[in-house]
Image (tube, rainbow, N blue to C red; front, side, top):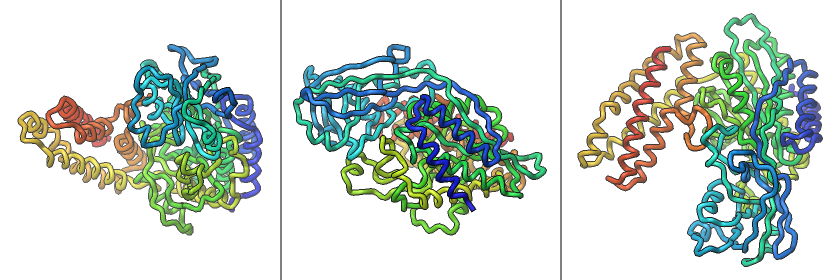
Length: 555
């Protein structure tokens, strides 16, 4: 039975450290968490990794001379040339208030000095559009509370060549009641105190070893971030408290056959997953050889979190998630993982399950409608009000029990808790469907026919059929090591991320090239440059995918 007193006390102790953004409060929080893990009997180790983080430490905003409270978003103007930006950025302009439909069709005319006010959370697409239009700045009305976001798609700390991906558009967020006081044409002054820097940040690892003789023991990593906006009770002291409580429970298991490594890092919100990426890079070989599963733990037990079942899973981990929910009623379908929640391990194909467990229903209030939160984590997420008021103790116990159930199943069954065939079937079906569409839509144009008749299309379909037999046999007969490596190959292909802006090897995977090229081809005008360019990319993607399938066969 989970220790609710331990769960709530750990949560309170972490929240009490305050806002954690690569600062003394965060260093103190690591000490608090290390002590909590030691007290339940886990082996604790802390190391340091390099991170690039960027925050806006202060915003001064006036409208016709009147002060308006505003907060800045992470990764706003993070670079000054090729150096981290330190100092104040100031802009002035005339306010233009735009609805969503007006903004969609908006085109700046002349040499105006406009600062636009938009509804919703700060986001990269709006900032890139404003940057292309040459606007002065963007303000975001985020509802009843100011929600801070990260406005970058550079995954992890930057590497040479990605500098142009960062936005150079000044921006800040305000709340709806203040937005209502603003009028078109007001003179806006915006001063942003930018604090970008490289730092060395702690990463905490707490180990719970298997207690049976098992020379083939694998490791499940349980991951979560420590950094926070405000006290971060929900995001993510709740997840870390659940990790500590689950560790105490796992240590009581007498039949655990596999290891657990709890990993906690910074740089999630103000470094775009810089902590998980740096730790991934540092421990690449061990992760590749020994880790069979990643259970991410984030934003548990929110007040009003009555929606259950939408937790993210992969095809290979869906059955594990269902077992974890035994005895829990839910009607929502599991969601498929996307590239968020510190999923820095997809490039090497580590299967993943969980992140959030429950969600808050959509609300009709201004804060939800304007901020676009649609429920999910509730009204306190990413705000200075993310305190204990946003936590429901019973909901947190429920979510922690579900999470712990899945972890228990993992350390007992190891790789057998994962469904190799389910992952393969989802991946191969997706590829077949796309290739069949390609062949069905072939043009009578001779050049297009030449592309469609490339041998690689049929070779790839034949290889998928061959591999289906190989993987079916392997799922039944192969040892755990071969099963795990086979599954990792499939996950790496199935969850390849776009190369654009993401600084990891997942961006180079074949399925991404194939699928993105397919999507571009379907939108391109026939016989246009984009049409044939996409054809070329699809053939290249198919060839690379074919080569990767052959590499699975050689295992």
